[in-house]
Length: 236
Ligand SMILES: Cc1cc2nc3c(=O)[nH]c(=O)nc-3n(C[C@H](O)[C@H](O)[C@H](O)COP(=O)(O)O)c2cc1C
Image (spheres, rainbow, N blue to C red):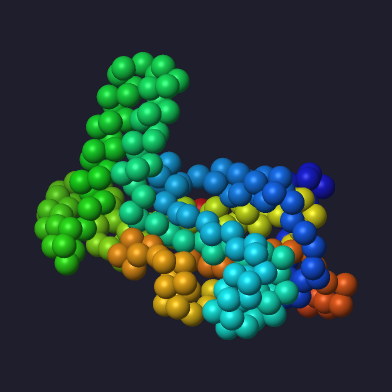
């Protein structure tokens, strides 16, 4: 089988790890692979916290409800959807385009798109700006085929979670390809873990924590089950 498909089919949520050192080179490779994932408007609306030191790992594992994969992993990656990073990201992309001598027209186009994006994606205090935009879009939609952008703060988090989750999957497949194993977890105390990492509740929400390490020899893997293809796919 092709190497990529092989890593994809081999990946399992591993619940018990044995201690191994993950080199900084390997860590970089895995994180680079994660952010290679596609994201809406290429905004990459996430931040990954790699928890490698023993003391911090133990603290985070406790906030992952003491789950075995968290307690035995070589590192824990807390993956956070970050809806406050959009302006900085678009500025960074503009600077990159200028450094790489993109044509003025292309830079202007991007500046325009980024500005529209900022206006669209700004919920305003108490979501008031979002409510106003929602009414406007709803009225426009009566006579025009159009999509509804993420307007309210919870829509923005949902939007950011899509790109963040794709980065998570990339991260897990990359780890598998490099001979490591992972376990994605949503069993954690989000409030305490956010506090521990100093996250802003307005802009940042933890999507999942990924335990990474080498599968323990003592771990007995359960058979993998998936719904039949016809239960999950409609071919039209
Ligand atoms: C978003 C998400 C949250 C999960 N949370 C946990 C968790 O908190 N603890 C855990 O042991 N496994 C967790 N899992 C792993 C699933 O149980 C596992 O992926 C599923 O049973 C399928 O098994 P497989 O990944 O080995 O194919 C989670 C998986 C996902 C995608």
